Structure formats: C-alpha cells, structure tokens
Length: 187
Image 1: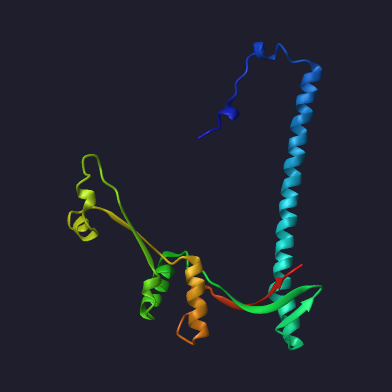
Image 2 (image 1 turned 30 degrees about the vertical axis):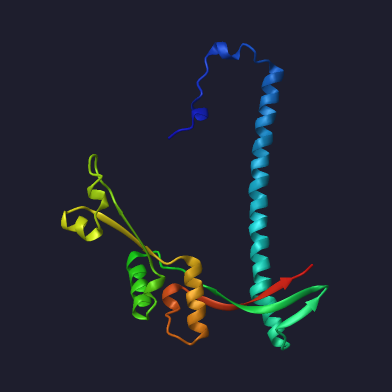
C-alpha cells in the first residue's frame, strides 16, 4: 500500500504562493532532514558497535582476566564485579531441524516445556463447528494449522538447569552456548 503523502499531485495553480525565498526555505528544510537521517544512521551504527564492544568486555575480557587471577568477585571504584554463568540457545528456524529439536525435548522428558497453538479458519455460518475439538475437525476434513514452540527464556532456563544437573540435552541442536559473564553492580 502506498503512502498518501508519496502520491501528492500538484497542478500549476498550487504554486501561486511559491516564491524564490519560500522554495529555498523548503529546499533547506528538506536537506536538513536528509542530513539528520544520515546522522541518525551513523549514530545507530556507533551504538551497535559500542554494544558489541561492551559485550566483549563482559563476556570475554573481564571473565578471562578474573579467572586467570583466581577471582570470582572483586570491588572496583565502589562497584562489585562478579562472575556468573549464562546460557543462550535458540530453536532452529528450519522446519525439519525444529521438529527434530522438539522430538529431542520429548525424548528427554521435557515435552511439558513445548507450547502448542492450534488455529482453524471457518467460513460464514460455521460458528457451531468452531467449538469442536481438533480431532473432530480433522475427521470433518477441515484444514487445521498448528504452531509448536518453546519460549526463548524457557529454553534458556531448561538448558541451564539440565547442564547444571548433568542431565541430557543436545546443546548443538539448540545452537546453545554456555559461558561466563561479568555482572557489575553499583556505580
């Protein structure tokens, strides 16, 4: 859908109030906003770079140095820096890999963490049919869609708990990473 402001059509009578000075002011305003757009893009790029650099300090440089000197907690300039374990992991996007990951969770007894959402489309005057359960709909030839997922935070918690208790979990299947991160509290 096109924006109505992209489709403004003017005829010659619309420019009766346009003077050279007004045209220059309009051009200057447009150039200014274009410059601001460029500044915003550059600032967003710098912001992303700063976040990546900060992440490197917290996940790599500080934990490595603290572990080298045998510390898991230190106070610096009134701030307490401590190390803790973090987990990241994601469900695969590829449908076949996703189904394999869900099967793995079921196989290791973690099927309760899987969420299911079933949706069905009905035509007009089919309200009563909408109240039926999934099996009834399939028997009637209705097309039933199903979404199966594990929430990201739930997956991270599950991975952490299974690793900490030495229980089975396929880390590679969930592109999981377990590491140490520096937490800084205070100033």
